[in-house]
Image 1 (cartoon, one colour):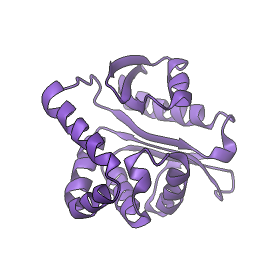
Image 2 (cartoon, one colour):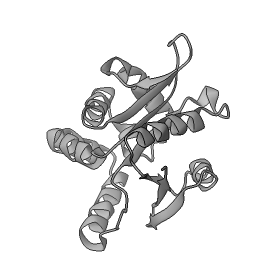
Image 3 (cartoon, one colour):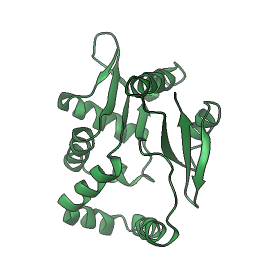
Length: 190
């Protein structure tokens, strides 16, 4: 069953997030308390946030966090939690260079992203990979975009995530831009 996310789902989302994203992903090294604040902020100001549970709603099979305000949510979260995030960066200094590089790209290179609606996070329960859950989540998300007459959306994926890249390359997405770490995709849905 796919439905809108509620705050009651956040503990399950955090567990799935920590299992799904490698420690190369900055949010995967956040404490659970910090992740709770992160997801509350993302969900509060983004419309397209969905969870997919088994029929009894006992096991979270996957989730999507998407909308028009993902960047704004991350900025607000960062501002509200700047000292905790700085401490986390100091404890995990390999991310410091990555974040400086991302800031450089924003300020100097100005990568152009041509979509306003962003699929920010998607995760599928490892025990259920290969069952079409990611595709079902994407189909549901796209159906909601069509209802709102939103013509396209974008997303970014790390270049090391070969499974996701294969999924997007086979799913009708086109490359929007690329940098040393990530590929940005765009997909039309109308």
